[in-house]
Image 1 (cartoon, rainbow, N blue to C red):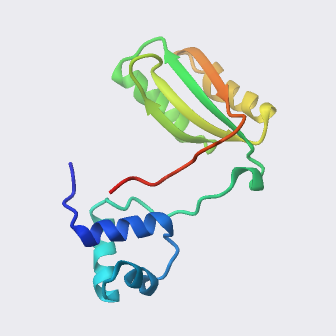
Image 2 (cartoon, rainbow, N blue to C red; image 1 turned 90 degrees about the vertical axis):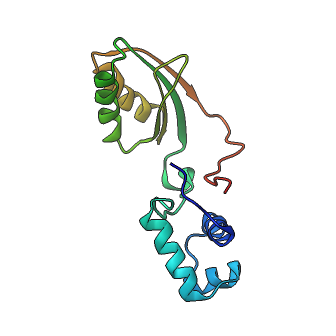
Image 3 (cartoon, helix red, strand yellow; image 1 turned 180 degrees about the horizontal axis):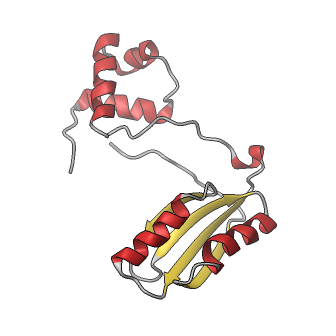
Amino acid sequence: MTFPLDDLDRRILNALQDNAGQTNQQLAEQVHASPPTCLRRVKRLTDAGVIARQVALVTPEMVGAALTAIVEITLDHQGAERQQEFEAVVAHEAAVLQCYRVSPGPDFVVIVQVADMPAYHALAHRLFATQKNVRNVRSYFSIYRSKFETRITV
């Protein structure tokens, strides 16, 4: 379901995607709106779920999480209940940043951020090797991140 956005909504969303930590006053000046109007619009966009949450982006290497793994998972049984069971397992793992059901190919692609290879090995054993419905795991390890963006074009 698409939420109706006007030009001011789009300016606000673009400004917040650049810097969600700015004050309402700064945001209002940047998008050329009054502070009360800006505050109401942000609240409306948040209440509607257009703005899911505001977060800080942390540099992984600076906090000891230097290894990024992109992991393909294939299940033995792909029924909806089995897929939901797998999603529930990975949802509780802090090192799993993203989990996607995909098609064609593997059933899931999971993005993992850990300290090093021993940490990945422990996570892989905990999440994948102990799960009876996981048939195949294929891991790719990032050697260099040339682009990382959270911005969505609005």
